[in-house]
Image 1 (cartoon, rainbow, N blue to C red):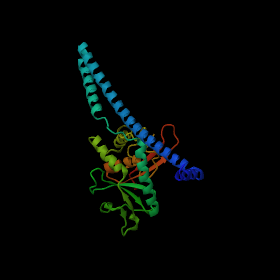
Image 2 (cartoon, rainbow, N blue to C red; image 1 turned 90 degrees about the vertical axis):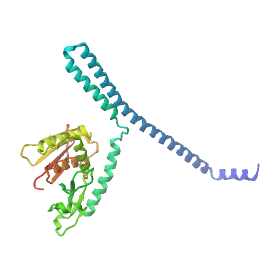
Image 3 (cartoon, rainbow, N blue to C red; image 1 turned 60 degrees about the vertical axis):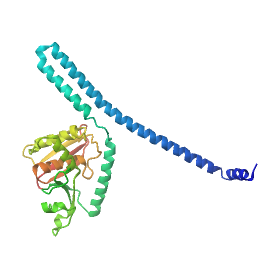
Image 4 (tube, one colour; image 1 turned 90 degrees about the horizontal axis):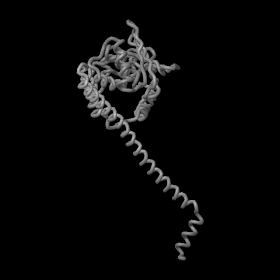
Length: 297
């Protein structure tokens, strides 16, 4: 046996943990590679399964359309109704098949992105000594094309005055009038409201109808909640929306997309400042109550 081999054997005997540590490191590296590959595979499988669901729905609608067409030929007296159903089924199949999303992002991913935004701005508000009150102010100044012309104002003082339209272009409002001091931000609901405009022909100005459309969009359009219900009495200066199963977690956090969308919608439609208050409730039907008020703001 050579001197080098003897030295290597002596080293292993003196340091038995070295080889074990190297082996563990290699095993961990291999496990990480396996888990990474498995994670990618699961993501692809999840996306593929969601696309298959849409395609199966499209095939089902095609089947209904063809069945109604055959029925129209067999039963001439009902041709008008059956042909109408066949047309609806085939048209829905085309839309479902070709509008299938290529990429599906889990709600948990978006929620974590929002959480970082909420935590950062909440910390900033604390550092600046701002109040918890949130006021959504309509603005005549043009904003980015993807945002509605509304700003979120967080006042510095309990007794405050709203900034004028010319002052809504600043982020930090520091004027000679100390009661106007505060923070101005683009609300998260501004981009959602812009998307809402694309989904509806005309935005109603009457609070009751507007509340119904906004809550319906939350549940059916954006799928941000499992259920939503608006309560409004004619002549009142506020509306209360009860929601359940928020996709973005607790809605009591800083400028949460759900109350932000609602308040931004009321502010933009009625062209008046709107304050929002959100509370968590213990109810079998709903989890949170969101109250939007547009007087005494």
